[in-house]
Image 1: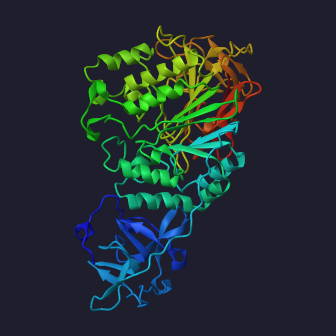
Image 2: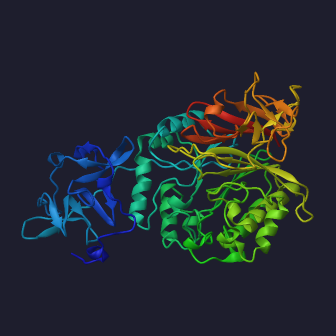
Length: 571
């Protein structure tokens, strides 16, 4: 056998301790005929990292598990290329495997006798996988759906089935499309293929819903990693293989990073879909991810910024801009400034925040564009310029990552260089088989409007949080009232000012930005806060519905049961 680095690698990146996870017991017929694990490929089973029990990856997951313990009496006989029978099992350096494996060799092999004779086995391929469908440039987008953070557990099957029933014109996968967290590309490919083999995802592929995508850290490579991830080139190839990029895709022909853009729809009804890569070029955001770069910290890198400016200067009616991390939440204030790699001497960092009127605002403590304020400000100002120069009428940001869904709104202040103030929106949708039932601060969540003491004119913004009767409320309440209400003014301590209250705008109400869409009757059980944060529902996904005739866009967060909340804006 050819010697390789496998001979001395007892602990490998990307490994897992299988015996610590409960798994089903299965007959061999439920096994994939060919699978990879820790830099080796198997045609059969192995006891690697599984307490001497034979296991395999499954053709179909069982109760969320993609692998199973195999009953050895069900394992068939395997033969070499010359027709000799493989030992049952072959034993090499303490590992027992039934069938053939590429351990210490480029091709699969097995022992044929107890004296150590071995021979090669003929390679075996798994059944072909279904492919993703790509959007057609001429097709108008009336409905776009989005989601992220895919796990085969919980109510994922119901969420995916409901999504399919909407038959969107485009679906955007926005990162953590698998949880690879590895530098082992065989492991990464295995996890991508396991996703395609999942019976519920196969229904999604079979529905031929056109797909675009980007990645985030866990499918890119490792938690919160960026340009220092050592396998970013190879990881990009696996990503493009999974999403079935055509042979002429620039990202397969020299482009570094997975960013792309497509102009979809006929003249006067064009949606420009721009997916950003917030990982490939990303500078360290904290010292544990690499050496800080201060004011030179970047998210997109110079090449991608130049490309994005060209895209934003290309005319379209609507622009959808996607990345794996959130755009609009402001900087988290609960962390010392000098903890951020982008802080530098603080001057540019603080100036970028102040110029967006966000000094003192505090957003999510998790990853977001706000961790690099200069990059976020640059993006928002370019978007503002694109709108004011007539290159687009509406910009909607789309994001994933957070394990909750929410609707956000930001008014970008007037600028001598970039023009009048403009309002942009964001839909965050995350994820499938995920849940995050914990309160999350975000002052740029879509406001909830109320009337004035029940007059029916919903033009006052609710002030959250507010205190009433000694209780603090982060959303509308029916306390001592026959319908949801809020205070529209509070004092310095957050206590509601007597008489300054209103009924919260219900479904269909006219508000300053357009209309309220739907507010679920069950919304108080779907959120820990106001109605525009959906974090107690289990799975969620987002929707962008475009009414071209009436020039309206509906933004919504969907659960397995219903449209939880939505808003309608004019463009």
